[in-house]
Length: 372
Image (cartoon, rainbow, N blue to C red; front, side, top):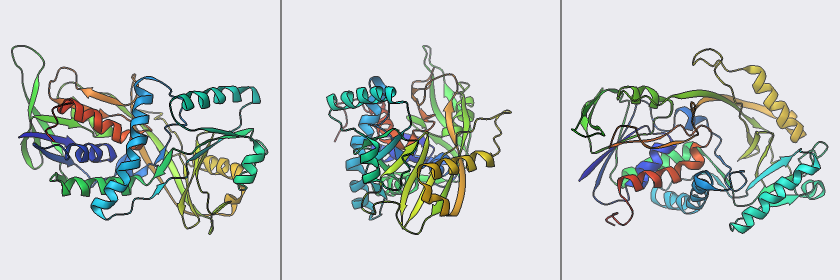
């Protein structure tokens, strides 16, 4: 029986664990220094911008499409298996456009492309927008792009359900465990093989090691003398309460514009996010209060009623952004035959988790050898 060790239990690590738990003949252990759904997963807004993204071909689009399709079956599957409710907004994403009218043609081209790929996208003029979403101030808006097949979900609820479902399928989770060192064997011909990790709970041997530790992936890969450089980017968000749904109570899509998200979370409450803050000195990023206030002001400019909302809480998290290469980093750790990377998803960890899990499964169990 092959033993797979996954290091990291954010949404990506948990999705991989659940995906692999459906393959017969695998023993799976997941380690994390913290409880599940901490770090960037715990701070994420869960806005799944797949169809509405401007990625139209290649791996970037393929992964988005795979994930958007998988979420439609994954959420009910997990809810049935765990008896947990995962908040999953099926009312789409509405992107407010403030481009000059001539730039609308670029969006029209995207609509055509998506239709040819079998996906729906609609361009709304301001009259239609005002009628359907009266909470939006159309004064500086030139129109909107509506994506009925994109979704938003609660990343923490999703991750906890993935963990429980994977446990139900026999996966072992160990929290509060840190990796201290590694042992590798160097065969006569490269690549090397990592056969053992030393942890705070003793040595662990495995056939495969999957590094899904976000920002923790850099020190982990450094222990294998092959560091993958992943840097933090801070994001801040707020939860506000209006006391009632904005606009039409029966139509509550996630609204986005100018990289600001207004996310309905039920009961007249909304998440507003998220800032994008880079380190100015080394790796330290103190949250910038001004940027958070500016984000709130932008949200109010889109939906003026938010000005009367009560701030129920604020939070921040660090996103893992690969340095000098595109996100995410998925594949074998250079020089190693059995260390796989599933990390550095930057702002798309929740969106790309199912596709990442599929990709890792394919690397461990090539198609046609799933043994199911």
